[in-house]
Image (tube, rainbow, N blue to C red; front, top):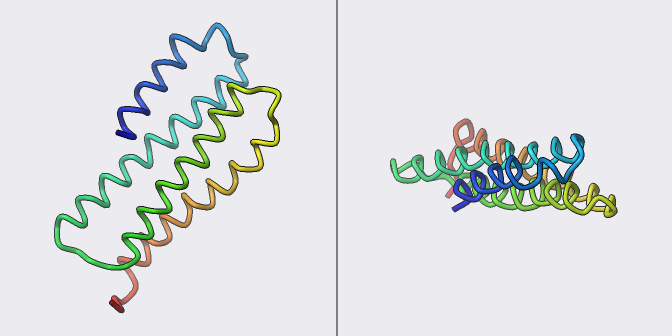
Length: 117
């Protein structure tokens, strides 16, 4: 669903927002779409990893961090682009970015650390 939402939001931006948003705001919106879509592939890879039988507690954490990261990072960028007067939303974006980074670190630990569960 997050992948389909990425495509829909990208199309919405290209066809419905291009004439309504400044170039700067369009760039913000497009960054949200790109990072959402990148992390959809990461979540897909996590599903394939789990399906292959690989188990490690960090895989679940990676998944959670990617989901929260998409919501906070991309979601705050969408809101920033659409609600130009709400600059305080920019404080949420780095938290989402930290969640995305944490997701990648958890994935790294799953493959390099020993399994304690």
